[in-house]
Image 1: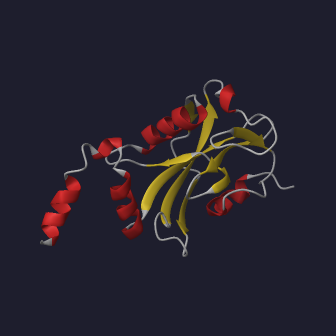
Image 2: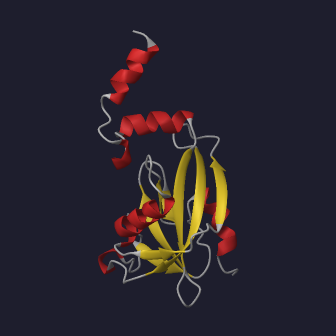
Length: 167
């Protein structure tokens, strides 16, 4: 089978790339090309930063909410989708990113190279209270405000330490 035929076969599994990709296709692409994503920096009036707990096959720890940009999707639209999905609310963003960073994880094959846009966001409404972390061991998708950079932040988000108050 020629390479073109393999590519055609893979493409036959993709209904609409603007809605995301089948996981095996996304995994293939993330093993061979950088992935573009947005991260949401949300701070409250006390200067605390909003983080969500991630617990999946890739990461385990606090992280800045974020998501991978879909095909032909504007960055602001992905920010809005992440706010709805991870925080249960809407946000207003400043149009220019606070930071543009590159994360390269040399030991990771899949999802080991990200180009990340960090956006300064303001909550437009209340957070999903069902997902509030109320103490004890955090559970996947819970959120909490952090005054300082937590020791159990995922390693890939070490790049955002400078946006936290110093302890």
